Length: 152
Image 1 (tube, rainbow, N blue to C red):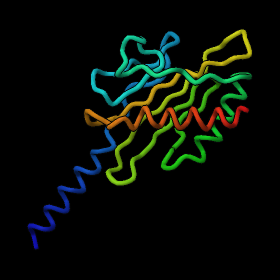
Image 2 (cartoon, rainbow, N blue to C red; image 1 turned 30 degrees about the horizontal axis):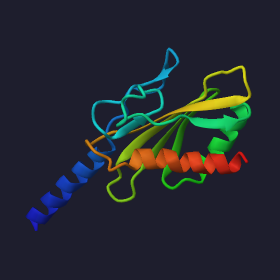
Image 3 (cartoon, rainbow, N blue to C red; image 1 turned 120 degrees about the vertical axis):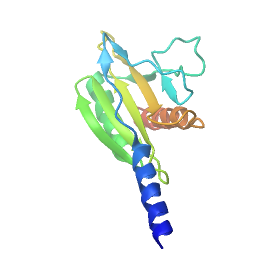
């Protein structure tokens, strides 16, 4: 019985560690944090020659405020999403995987522009592990599709 209790306790400790610690995030000098070398991150401000990490920003016709309202609508209906930070030009969300409870940090940056077309800069990265099997890229593409549908 003691062996089963020890295994259960060890499993719980390991699973609690799956959430990882919150990395340094946000916008510095107009840029989101670059992706690490691991393939579990995408960033629209990464060099376009870095095909592993680069993803197109999300285009939006309208104001940054309209883009943010529509994006928040999409995020509030997303499964296992926790909106953590909402600022005038920045949103950060934590997505938690269903089974292992891994946390991915997703950021949206709305740089000011003079035109009516907004390019929402995005970054999505896993806190732990090496590969994410394309989950972060798929998530951004899903959000892009839903936001585009709302913007029509």
